Length: 310
Image (tube, rainbow, N blue to C red; front, top):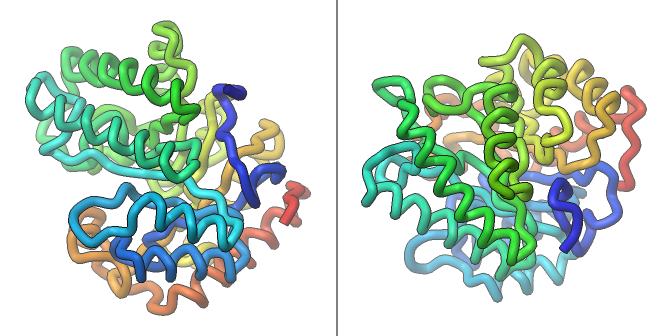
């Protein structure tokens, strides 16, 4: 196994200092065979090095073997993501609900391993929902216990687990990089070193003093970034301080993935639309949005002298 702080890649992203990825939700609303092909081939044609695939669920979804075949044909790498929900929350003392959440996390690790992905990120520590009360010490302790067990299984599969903190309206447990770093430090004391801090700029923009401060607070545990605009639209069309963020990443010697994440109700499922409140269509054409977001990001990287291999 490699460095527990670095996500392993096998294809296009293997030798890149800052591999650039895109969330499958930019392209498709599910992971049917046709959707998987459209998302993977579209990402490769647009110039990305990896694709983030939400864990497929339900009937009619592309198999792991189908997904691998598409990745191999395009040369793309992949990572996997999920968000726990109220029925599968581990930030709880409800044993049945927690067991469902642990099972979902283990299934995500299994899917990642099956497609050759070395990372499972997202809201992996609580439900992604508006809680009616603060997290209790017992809730938090259960989340730590579950993640310790999941991390042990993931380490055997050479998979890293990312904890993506989100805004106060989508979790009551981890809302800042500092909180998440502390949480990860506790897990590291238990031997769970293969857990990484995942910054999403949309959420950080709501909760942090600045994006640069978030990078500083994350420190060496920072392993993955979602690049998402202030309004979740195409990169460069909102109000985020991209220069400040990328300068902080340069100064911290960050070398992990930068994954473009933008959602539109023109593409995502109604369930995803309702969950994240994507009521407005800030764009309608995935191909144009993918290409323009990548172009904007490359221009920003060049300006801040962050070197990439693509």
